[in-house]
Amino acid sequence: MSEKQHPIRIIGVGHQFRGDDAVGLIVAQRLRAVCPPGVTIVEAQTDGAALMETWAEADEVIIIDAVQSGARPGTLHRFNAHQQPMPVHCFGCSTHGFNVAEAIELARTLDRLPPRLIVYGIEGATFEIGQAVSPAVLASAEELAERLADELIGR
Image 1 (spheres, rainbow, N blue to C red):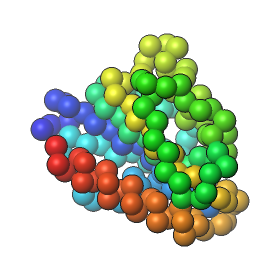
Image 2 (cartoon, helix red, strand yellow):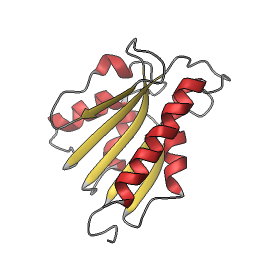
Image 3 (cartoon, rainbow, N blue to C red):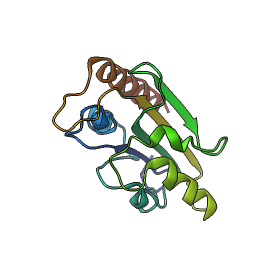
Image 4 (spheres, helix red, strand yellow):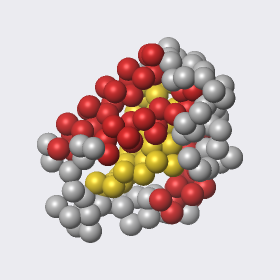
């Protein structure tokens, strides 16, 4: 499968120096070494407004970002953007000027969603500058990376 035939884009969103906010980047880095041809890995440290350009022309997009909903740190949330509106309040912890959920809802309004868009949110605990990723969040990142790798390799 070539990237042109069935482009799949995995976008890890976050800031590497803000504690658990780095979790999307960590999952993207883990997947980069194991993903099959046809899968593009992107580490996005920019705001959500740029996401529409990042996923342009992809058939399938998977976004990974930190969330803060009040659940236990490390809790994995999965959202299918075509089946439900994005819970904007969960992505409010983002350090980005325009968060992932807001970007997706804007794209929905503009009819610019990719044909398939799945968002994984990993519940974070600390988002302070200079903090390390918490152990529960790191464990969830490793689990999600393994799950996505198995899913992508098995296609």
